[in-house]
Length: 269
Image (tube, rainbow, N blue to C red):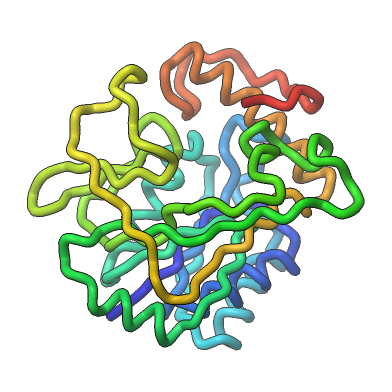
């Protein structure tokens, strides 16, 4: 059984990347890490500083993870394009995927969790895990948050969809949390952020159920502990994304959109 951690990152502190990769070793055999900014992100560059790539590769070697690090030569249209690329690349040769952001740190009983994954019937496609977002001890929740979604998680545990079978045909549709794939030859939703809504134009695929993992497995979501620069950049990106969705019904950059005007103050939904 091969478990792959799938990481999309751009311009992150090296200590955060180190913690993320060390956490990935609690479940995975390898890590696929996809670099690069979105076209509508503040000060966007195609690739992160080289020390970040070096950190991912060094730490992966230290903890015994095979590392596939992809460095693009152009900006991504947005989260939909980048996450689709990540899912498809990570699924190659894998049985399960653990999908992480740079601010996700996995804490798990590796042996028990992997044994559980091996024993699941093939009909089990999605697993939820306990997901905790610690508050910032020196900054208010508002000042620590890129969006109201982030603020609403402060100090809370939730059940978070995190592990998914490496199905063929992965794609992210319209929104960064609407995932679909092929299951037994038919397209299904494998949702990571709630059930796709027909009112918002979701296609009428069957929705695969998610099951809670039983082994000890937690994800620490340290987004509220980010430095001010990253918080404000994320906030500006999310504000622009609200405008993009209103105009296009999806999240990625497309021809005809006005250039972004970054709002670093408003905390968007």
